[in-house]
Image (cartoon, rainbow, N blue to C red):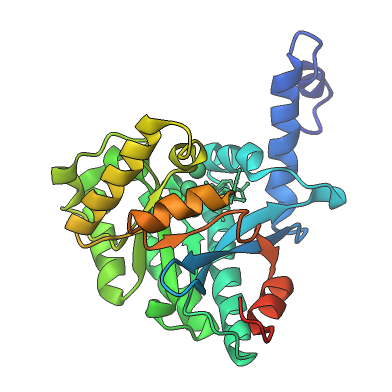
Length: 278
Ligand code: C2E
Ligand code: CA
Ligand code: CA
Ligand code: CA
């Protein structure tokens, strides 16, 4: 409707509710965000409980149109609905691999950078070649990349998921299931996927110390994952009590504000290169 007076009038007619108008404005500016270089990445360290060392970091997309940040939970769903997530996700992959290579050159002791994949990207027939190209351009090895796929995405189209994940996994890329526990996968199902890691959703970690049911679920997920030869990451760890619980139950890694918020690349580098270690 852009440029047509009547169309414009219709778009912004008073009866169009505020939420819909904001959604449309968000979508319009999101369309220009790549060209305007409004994206950047932050990185949250993933800490191994054994030895308390940081071996990898998760890339998290940040968008600041006109300098003002919009939360991923607001713009990612819009990017997903519009398909914009496909080119944006490709940018994330390239930027994350390029950053990893820069860290390597600076001697940062990180083994891997981890990138989130959305459903639309995953369904795209080019995904494997996009991933290959991102690795090639940055001169990164597949073993230096991890990909996170949500549990609900796996379940939406299991056969296709198995096919694509097998290719990526055979390349040497580490595959994690994100937001685990929020979907409906059963143990028998999960073992059919070429998966290396399970990330326990933040919602189960939050009340670990006070909610016996959440504590039981987390304990069960850790045991189940280990029986499938998967390692386990707990996300959203904010307190010492949560960490102590996870340690006691044999969780492999954690991520959360307790250790560090997502950080700009240079800040993470400074922290990892500091003499005191992580
Ligand atoms: P996610 O993949 O589950 O990422 C973890 C989210 O939890 C991040 O939010 C992170 O900042 C937040 N977080 C980390 N530690 C804590 C903690 O201790 N407490 C609490 N309350 N939160 C914590 P963020 O960065 O706002 O991202 C939200 C979601 O947006 C992500 O959830 C992911 O689904 C999506 N997202 C972010 N970047 C990308 C991307 O590059 N591509 C795609 N497809 N999705 C992305
Ligand atoms: Ca994630
Ligand atoms: Ca997650
Ligand atoms: Ca989550």
